Length: 241
Image (cartoon, rainbow, N blue to C red; front, side, top):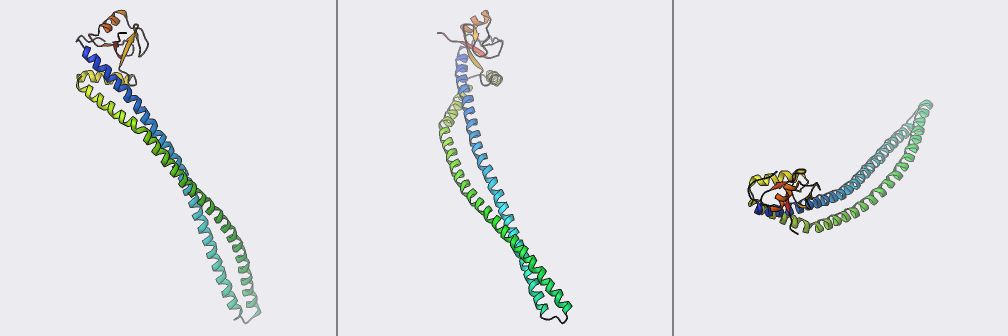
C-alpha cells in the first residue's frame, strides 16, 4: 500500500506512536499478570474460607445433635419419674408389673441415649478443635495473603505510572495525526498484537521477516510516503545506519 502524500513528519510521529503503543501493550500485559496473581491469592483464601465454613456447619450440626439427644434424655427421665410415681399408687400386681416394665424400658433407653450422647460430645469436641485450628490458620493465611497482595500492588505502582505516561504520550501524538491515519494505525495494531509500525532492514520487514520488493524498498528508503508491508500490512520505515 502506497500513499502519495509526502509523509516524513507523519512517519516520525508514527514511530513515536508505535514506541508508546509497544510499551502500553507490554505494561497492560504486566497489569493483567498482576491482577491474575492477586486473584489467585484471593481464590486461595476463599477456598480456605469455604473449608472453614464447612467445618463450622459441621460443628453446628454436631451441637444440634447433642442438644437433641439431651432433650430426648430429659423426656425419658420425665417418663421414669412419672412411672415411679404411678408405681407408688398401683393397687394390683398387674399394674405394678406394667409400670415397673415401663421404668425398666425407659432406663435402658436412657442408657443407650447417654452412651450416644458421650459419642456425640466426643465427636463435637474433635470438630471444635478442627474449627479452632482452621480459624487460626485462616487468619494467618489472610494476613499473609494481604501482605503479599500489598507487596504485589506496591511493585506495580511504577508500572501503572509508566503506563499512564505512555497513554498520555500516545494521546498527545494522536492529536497531531489525521484521524484516518489513526484509524489505520489502530486497525493494523489490532491485527498484529500492538505492532503497527516497524522498520525495514536489508529489504526485510522486521515485523513478519518477509522480503520487501526492491522498488518498494527504494520508496521506503526515500521516506516520502507511507508504505505498508505487502505481507503483514505494517507501516514500514527505514533506519539510516
